[in-house]
Image (cartoon, rainbow, N blue to C red):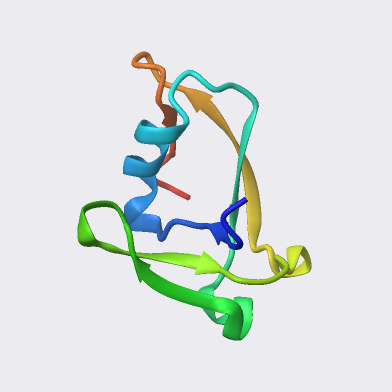
Length: 84
């Protein structure tokens, strides 16, 4: 719809999950190295004036580092474990 894939850097993930994914079950977190996403990755101003990664083009799923199922915390926000 927007012409690109919205992504979040690791330090932005908590805010993204709280704002857009509260009370959503069966979510899967997939990690990528930004360098593996190629020239289609652009860092652009978004929420709160912060730079967020946006991918213009196909997501190279073969470059995924890992995937983890997210469980909802008591507040309904999907929780990311510190060891990830």
